[in-house]
Image (cartoon, rainbow, N blue to C red; front, side):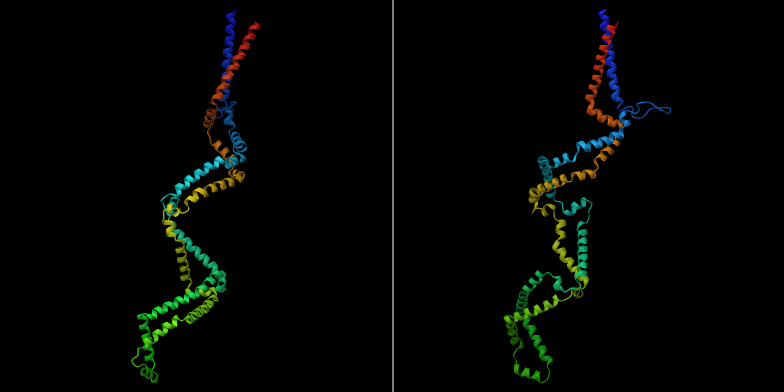
Length: 381
């Protein structure tokens, strides 16, 4: 009798455990399966498709909302940007990349070619020439009817005025050197001969009578040199230059273009600007050579400050950036592209052990229910 009761209770426990475990396992599988609805003619079989396939759109929307509301919040990202360890790691990364970039032996033209910008020097020269032309036209339209005195900066005018005595001294010095030379003396002789030859009659005869066999160049050369070295001559030349410079300053700007011709003037400015900028040296030298003078400062000072400033800027605008990124929409769209099989695989890979425990718990509860049922049956009988 006792043996029969024990077997009955044991069978009830086994049946309850099997039913409980199978029911929980089936419920878990029904979360995903079947993947598609099953129809018998026009009648859809209940509980098909599974819960997650049926509600995938809602799941995707909720996942996107959960990510932005609870996981990737502006506050959490802001704390990350301002974290000292994060900024230190980012500074190290930026410095490492800067070292690699600044130490490269490639030229700027080669680096730009990698980015798809070919013939960078030619294009830069074209842009520079275009800038000069546009600037020239803009300045001409603005200043063409105004005197040069109003166009040129007072500093330049002041410097030019200060250079006038130096220019006059240079002219007189070179003039004295020239007329003191044999070439200068020959020039004086030719000029004197021409002067005498062009004079006819009494004046010519009188000159020949008074001068006799004396060489006019020997008499004139010392006087010219003495005149050129005289201080009063320097003052005279400076005064003349000053008057002419004042006249030029009173010219209308348009007159400069008339004097030099527009095309020649613009080309002269272009050549000056290109020589000043030195594009060939800029594009054809190795990048490491171009940056050698400020390499250490960029790596040790500018890089950390840039990371700090960028982190502060991003943290202060992270809410706007996240709003513009539409993270919730990105997550929703991404989840919607997942197949049901992949969703199932993702969920099971994360919760595999927990789902097994739910199955075992169902078996345990079923077994306990079977035990109580067996005991209840024994008492009733």
